[in-house]
Length: 462
Image (tube, one colour):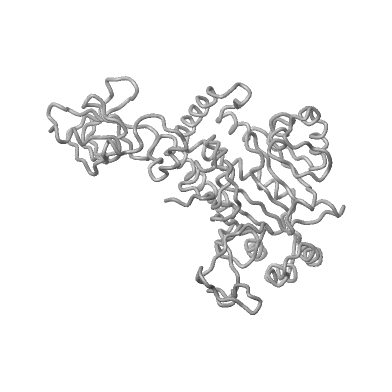
């Protein structure tokens, strides 16, 4: 019989006797058995769901079913009361929407405790993978004067007054009087800055917050999210694909090894959710099967051109079952197309490469055919694209032509072009939205449920 001291939060309290306690470290509660006859009534009244308590007692083998051990309580102290009437996280099933409205407390539920522990482990695995392989971690700026993606949907950063800002002779806002002396935004990607470091340190990676001012109220978009972006000097597209596949398999395997109980719980949760859906909408694989599917299959490498032929001749395309019909080469693939390739045609994760230049960013290396670029996307079951990357355009003249074609001001990117002027070399990298990875590993279906405090249009609470 061991004497123990534990602190945590009350999940349930039954029959004035059985207290389920959780301290957030694992998914399971510990049952604490209270001698209610010798405990003051005042104390018993204060043992409510959500209350913080400190318990001392003896750890013994449990007499009841459901747990191996329990604590026979010798002393209990209420550290923080929780009004049972007002506490939102009652011991019952809550909708995910309700839990989003209580994002500051939702992590006290089993589902969100599990998700956030898995997220933490995945985050550590990212650093572990790159640090073990000699990559240098680079912190790229959050405030930037350039639009890396040409995405255009950026949050402006300004210290000018909202009312009556200074204007120039043309009547436009005079940003020369702003804090940085120019127009600045929150970053959409650390890639361009990371490239400059790769061209000195060889192998680098960024892992930090990025921002998109897209008015997308979907289950796959956030206005603030975390991006993992490695850049490697002397790597071509093939080496880039090798790195991305190896990296993804490593972090998923790491999470499966370190979080077996959380993932088993999330797997069961997903199966229960699936039972409520119409048969046609149910997942063909359980969460754990999906994770093993990625680990046990080599990623199939397919050119965009080959993928278009497969999709054009596919049953859903011919029978007009796709929402977006594939008519011709050059189409931007949608999630339904990507999932068809992975789940129906190849039955393995897929890496698509050599995309049309017109649908990809300016910095991707132009192929000799003049119409495709050395880009690659990794497609997963249930989610579609999870990684996007490319071999970067290392030739100064080609890059300048592309920048001018797109109407980007060369002066804004003088520093980026310098890496092509002074010791340029083949180099490649990719971007992985961290929340998309957490979404896949936890089996959740809404990206707002895998980040502690989601930032979305019309929502910046907490």
